[in-house]
Length: 104
Image (cartoon, rainbow, N blue to C red; front, side):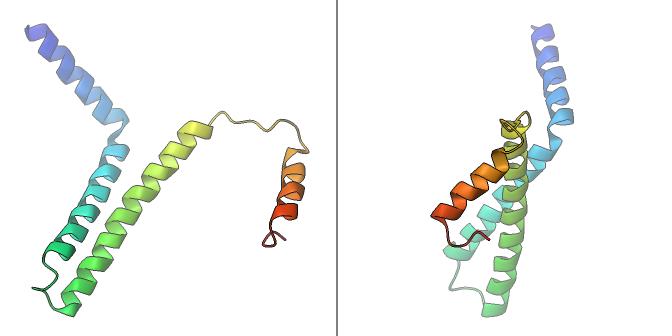
């Protein structure tokens, strides 16, 4: 039984060492969500200046956590992506020009 717990502790330490950045970003996003919860739950008890301060703080926390998680997720999904051929981007851009007036 002691060996099982020892293995779990070692595995946990290894995972924390490898993925500490993801844990920090999840905690940042969680703090941002909690800040917004506090703003909504106690919105009538605070003056406008404090609400603005907590709103900015919540946006920074939630935005930084979400941005890092999105970056890690996209890097993980597309890390081995290789275009089909050299002209792939030019063909894609030409196709998008047909469908969008915002591409230049």
